[in-house]
Length: 389
Image 1: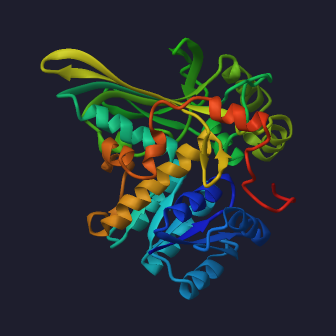
Image 2: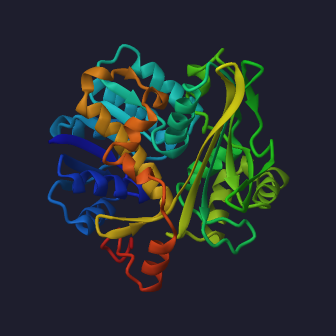
């Protein structure tokens, strides 16, 4: 059995443990600064293969000591992006495979530097965006003789928006603010360029529903570097319901809360509810030349909440956790094929979709499951402790 250390017992870490534990092929150490939270997640799953620990991973000495006394083959960081560099450094030092979910460009650059010459795989930016969307885009690009444009659009959205932001908090608030507030990367005219967040506003219609899309940081991942010189234009934008961008511009730019992110985080977490009834919308468009004709190919999918390990998980939890688990699974099954820095676009789309964890990205889902389980009070609990349920 593969031994995996999962850092962070939050919404994504909890499902990562569930997916790996349910497979029967992994022994999981779930570590969190809040030991009671880690225990409550492990108890809720009820798998003997999951063991909980209290561990402050921001303390590199404590993390080093834990790895020394509890050997693992790989570490998955489900921590806030600003802790990942320290975790990656310990992984390099202790000869572990490393995976994270970060959208932060600077952190990914640090991980890339640590991966130089490593005998293990260092795969940052797993998950949805960056992550799966990069794999889908790279797959479509491979179908063209010459690529002109690549558009990647992803939205994690409430199924039933009813507040002024038309949004629900579905993942890390720190990560959300980071995406909305940091400089973005793109490719224009064949060259990498920097773009302002919350700009580049456009409209998209998918299956009769109107969305808006705008620049956010990190979603491009390493794709721009991987395909430098091969594509004329490439960008990543986040999708929301119309009107969201205008409200966020007011908060972050008009009220200067991009300069006071702690206050912005408190405002959002106090005013914007969380939900299990969400939908993840993925849209990728690639244009270019095929057989000397100018053509376009698209990958479009909607992923809804799903039941895994006997309880309901939101679409953003499913897509993020399934993405990193699929990459982990592929790497650990063939470790000799993956070492040093591993970009998401190194994996083929079919390879991910055929994987036992990647299959949760399959087409054809609906909102029916989440609607029924929420209405009947049968969603289950992702933690067993009343303090954390």
